[in-house]
Length: 206
Length: 385
Picture 1 (cartoon, each protein chain N blue to C red):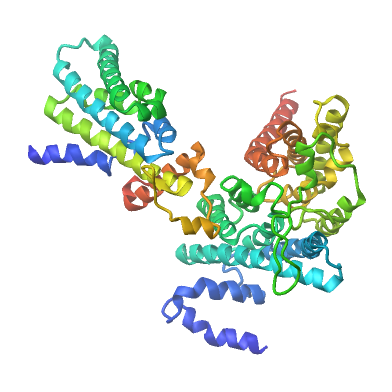
Picture 2 (picture 1 turned 90 degrees about the vertical axis):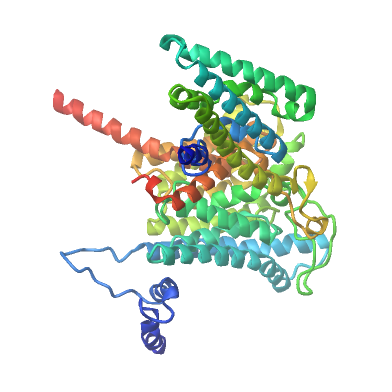
């Protein structure tokens, strides 16, 4: 059993990553990765929400009538998103302003509905919890990779601290403005997928 | 023949068991560059045109030479005029040569290094496509474009616009234009504005330092000023600031003649770019918005900026343009129309040619599809009658 739990937690981190394998949650990955800080907050918020909603739905799974299960799932997710959003507004106002609507849009994030439908409806609460943590962290990992590249090359900073030294700028280095535009996030996610596919040959489409 | 003998002598080193087999693609590339390969087909009868892609590429490079040579002279001329020096031919040309040469070298070294690596890695022969792209790239950036920015742009565009699609002949966008886009969008201040068109320092003792000198291009002025600069024959000769190879209509026309005479570039694409651009520019003249760019006479639109260069060398790229004969007209018309529309309607981006061609590159397969389907439908109707 411990082995299976391990699998459930680790699979989504790399082999079955929600972003680069299942191509879910791409929109928010493009929108919030211009800087590292909002990307980390977004990743953690999604992790918490997926894990908790997985647990709640898993607990309720035998009592939810099949016909209205999507509505029940949405109510649970919406409640959790609202709580996270309010907490962010209270304790991390600047970040919540940067993330603007994207925290609210977690409700429509495909990863959430996907995990609830595919996993939490059939599995026990503890497994579902681990699955949620794994998928959330897998999503967060891609966000962080993309955000590190974009913030470092686009702004010369990481988490707001200057990384590229001043003398580089004095010798003609310039920040790459393209990195801050949304298309670059798409290209970077593409590069991550490229690396991922070349490491996992069985995923390559013929 | 000693070179031939030398190549034959070192061949065994590059065979799969040889000590230098990691450089096999390099050897093959140089051998087929220097000599006509004598490999023949192993089965069946094949008839091949002697006019292969290698000769085609070399023809385009020859066609680009007038633009490059004149561009070099003009880079020197603009600098010497700005510095208030006498414009004798050789110092002026020498200055321009030394200013442009590093960009040509960077473009070829970076681009070919990636091509050779990929060819070696995929066990393929080196393809000739980059010979032309590498020659065009230094011609479509200002002579002051920083080398490292150019190097990064060349590397990313060769990888992302060409190699991941399968190399020469498989790319859907024009590699040289993607390079320009990847220089422009990350660092707009390094490749556009008023301060980049004239080299502001002395090179190897030629010229003089003129810090902080600014000189806008005709398009740059027209996009910000109340009235566009009047038509001037210097715009046709090319003695105006601009990207290295784009200023002289005469030099580009020489290249265009060679391309049309040899049949490499399609006259249909070339002509329809000018027709499309002229029509739209004329429409803006008659009933356009009230700005300097719209009021610029339609014939002046042709001679400023990169319109001519794009129409002759970029739009006609046989890989990225439409392939059907009717499609070439549609493709060219839309490029010309889009280029002028972007110039007039978007003051933030005065040169629309790059964006127009890249946009139509994306639509070329769709145009071809529609033309082919229309033909299929027409013939089907004829059968059913």
